[in-house]
Every structure is written in structure tokens, then in C-alpha cells.
Amino acid sequence: MGLAVSLFVGWGFVIGIVAIVAGIMALRHPRDSRRVAVWAIVLGGVSILYSAGWLLYAWAVLT
Image (cartoon, rainbow, N blue to C red; front, top):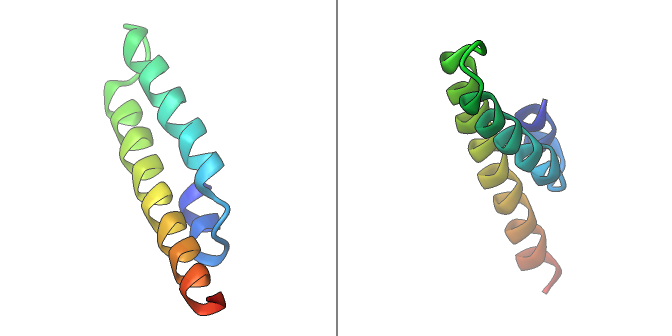
């Protein structure tokens, strides 16, 4: 969800941060899927990068 939001709006980094925190918490629980937790961390990081790109682009255009 964070990645999809970050493609269109620059403020999706909050959802990316939540995904990373949730992924780290899932890694600590042995019954949760490690593969899903790693995907949550990776996609959360990509979401943050895309959002940062949008915000930098908007800042460059406005100045």
C-alpha cells in the first residue's frame, strides 16, 4: 500500500515506515513468515525512496 501511494503522492513515507516497523516486529516472532517480513521491510524501504524522490522533485520545481 505504501509503495502504491508513494508512486502518486510524496507523502507515502509514513506508510513505508509503518511497514518497516511491522516487518521488524514480525521477524522477532518465530511463528510469523520470515519471507513476508522481509518483503514488508524491502517494500517499505522502496516506498520511502520513491516518496523521498517525489518530495525532492517537488522541492526542486517549487524553488
